[in-house]
Image (tube, rainbow, N blue to C red; front, side):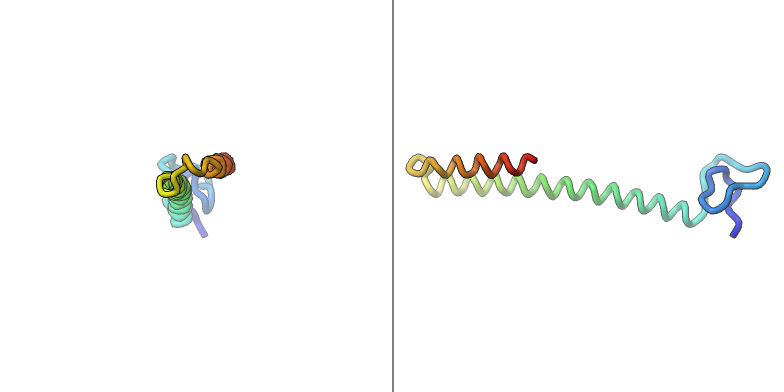
Amino acid sequence: MQGCGDHGCVIAKPKGMGTNMGCTCPASKLRCMIVSLQEANRMLLEANEECKMQGAIAFKELLLEASNAMMYPHIEGVFAVFEERNKK
């Protein structure tokens, strides 16, 4: 298979003169799409972790309010351990 004639071609480097405009082969476009999808996946995973923590914080606040933490001070200690483990 012959490449597109660009010096950065992922299929085949040009023999002799070539261009520096970027590879236009389908494999190059596929690689760009894969990199974009990997970046989007990374961003979604980070957002998911942030949502989990926000949900845990909201749950903690509701539980402390409902259980009257003044009567059960150990509950705050349990959540402190939970939060410390999730920081890692």
